[in-house]
Image 1 (cartoon, rainbow, N blue to C red):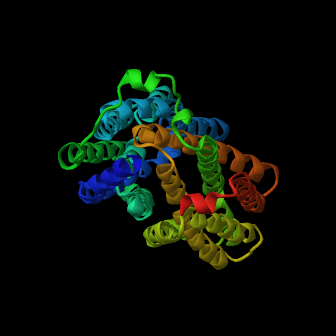
Image 2: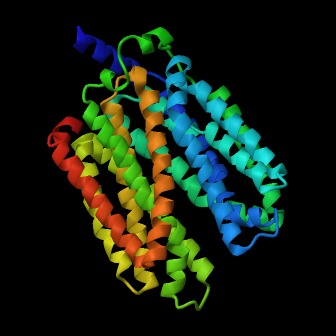
Length: 412
């Protein structure tokens, strides 16, 4: 009987609207990725326009305002996930895009740092567009195509995030930083309308009573330990990425001896991981569907450590660029494969909840990474950040490999 139900479920998924939704949500997450990233690089400049700050005060407020969104995201994501399992993921897509659009618009009207901080906090409160898009696809795609579908979907947000700072820089140059917030809000309104009218979801809600009835989230999954390890892995991978992002341009300046077009070179090097990520994610997803997601995950951990560690030892900006390009390949295997493993080990009725917890752990990784990178670079040097990141990923790999020795077999 169970086998028949699983077969029916797979047949329903196969003939459902998952392909159409994948195309629509790829474009929506692409636009959302642009919207979410096109103002972030200029937040400190925007803060500087709001008062006569000294260097220390400007750094403090910029860091606080940047981190505030991730703080509220980490807190509220599980709550939105539980609600999504009762109301559907499509509703959450509309909620997230419209809510962030509103407070992005209000951020453009802000006249002091307190108003901007409040807007950033509420942007985090309404976050969740991309993970809900992932959860919707994960709940509809046939399991045998899960890796390829999620790998393809992640290229939408990744490529949007890659282009966002470039688009934002052009808009800020042509108009102003303040006007960029208004344009970003308009983009998110477009995303909300596309989500409302083009995404199809046949959703069977999970009742509030059923959610509360005797079983917690971890009790509903077959391997709670694996879910916890995968969530922590998301946090650690994101911590590693975020620890490097804040200092990459400073490291480029050091390697170039403060001579030449430093900002141009730093921008290119910062974009290289996104380019390789777009190229590699669908291919690694298909490989994982065929040969086992666990094999991809473990291989990419080792590959990531092997290419991040020497970045702290080299003295050539060209070599740094080559190694940063390969970082995108490792990320293309790590994040989508963790999501694929979560999908394959999670019952459909708690998919949104698990993906929301995944977003919370990713947000925590953003916070911890920025703090770790700044602390290490300040106490030692930039190269220590790369070496520590590689060691952190190796530790995560060891935990995964030896706490779940049957991971390869389970994920196949």
